[in-house]
Image 1: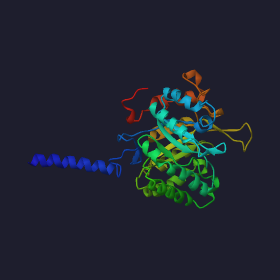
Image 2: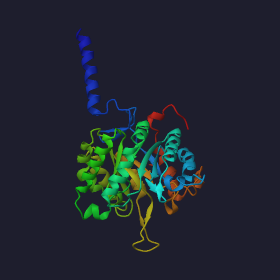
Image 3: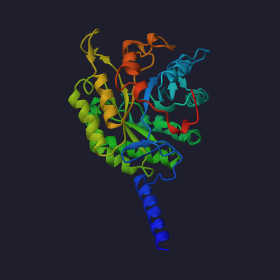
Image 4: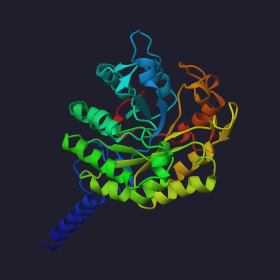
Length: 348
């Protein structure tokens, strides 16, 4: 009898510990967050090693050419485990096509990658009405779509909403207030997916996340939020600042990913030729050190291109930036990426 009671106590303690480790998400069917980490629906940690792909600008058009869509097979072939889908509510003066977006989601999932869907309409904007009435409403109006893909899709509410002025010269409490309201509206619509939140100053101001991230995270009844920082000119040029960004957020047990970074960035405010030197290798090393996901910019986008053309199947078809990202760096995609365990039985 004593042995039976001892076994029961041990099992109960383990179960109680698991519930404490995954508060509110113990029976989750979606991706979720706990203890500063992102987990898939199988309760296994997932660290994105992804790429930004410009779907809305190259797939949502009136012809049959779907360059970003067709590139997905090649992206998967290089070992990426996630794709950050560039999308908009409106493009070329019209509403975008939901059927096209769902086709993109289905293809990414078919290729064993996790889609992170982002909305670009308010990039760099300070228009709070557009943020809520155009972008947040777009998400809530499609609640059934996100419920359908609850165990696969991450929701990046608004790419890079908020400019430099909002980050550093205004009321910094705008950041937590608008995102708490966005979370409330999205959860009230019955959407349980992981929510990805960009900071202000085109998502480069990591200090806003350090100051208000816990408040925003705790506001979510699902406790299912990941914060997103981008590294370009400024925040991505100094190793000490890059380390501080990772450290200051992850030490608070706040889930984090790098939604965008590259090897350089143009500086048109200096001259047409000027570029800043983004420390891409150091960013990758810190992401690996702190267990943080990253999404490179971008598969095919002018001087930022990872691939030399939309279709690339071999190392020689990658740019120097692409070779660093995918193959050559110790923290490259092929050396650090793992599929989400929801794809464990699948093969590429």
